[in-house]
Image (cartoon, rainbow, N blue to C red; front, side, top):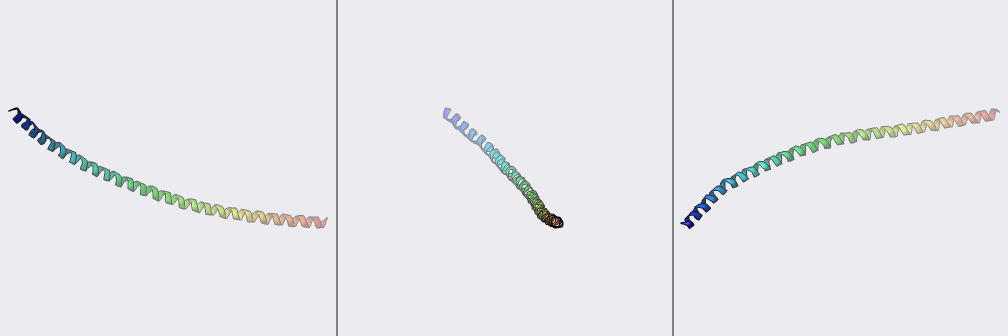
Length: 96
């Protein structure tokens, strides 16, 4: 009789495990779906950040190119001004 009760307990215990396992499987599946959705959202956000960084890099490159042109122009202007001043000094010195 005690054995019958133990068997009944085991059987009822086994039966109670099935719904728990089923619930765990459903939770696991929903967790996987959530994880996949989160992954897709993060992936999309990373793509947007990458695009924004690419745009910033292009703007930075453009500004840097303009700055180099400005420096070159400034250098040429200073060189021309120096030549003019040197020529004027030469003219002034020869007139004295």
